[in-house]
Amino acid sequence: MSEKNCEYTLGKVFDFLANELEENERTKVLDHLEDCQACQKEYAIESKISKIITSSSMEAQTSFASKMQSRLQSEI
Ligand SMILES: [Zn+2]
View 1 (cartoon, protein in one colour):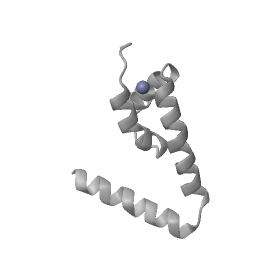
View 2 (spheres, rainbow, N blue to C red):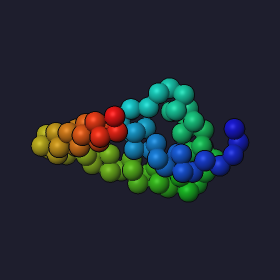
View 3 (tube, rainbow, N blue to C red):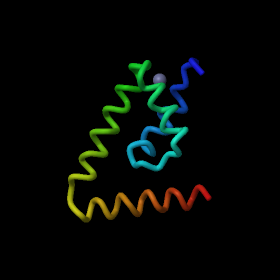
């Protein structure tokens, strides 16, 4: 599993930060991030956004949570 898998990783970064990944998915994302600078960059950006969200007001957090929820529901 040494192949580059940027598409997969970038698709999972947001869920990774939101702690919504299965253990094996987390491992895959971390493994890829370790040797892919392009994805590290993307991860850093997402991580910053996620920090802003978690450190911002209650209102922003609530709307973020409901956004995540409706996204999950639309996937079912
Ligand atoms: Zn990558």
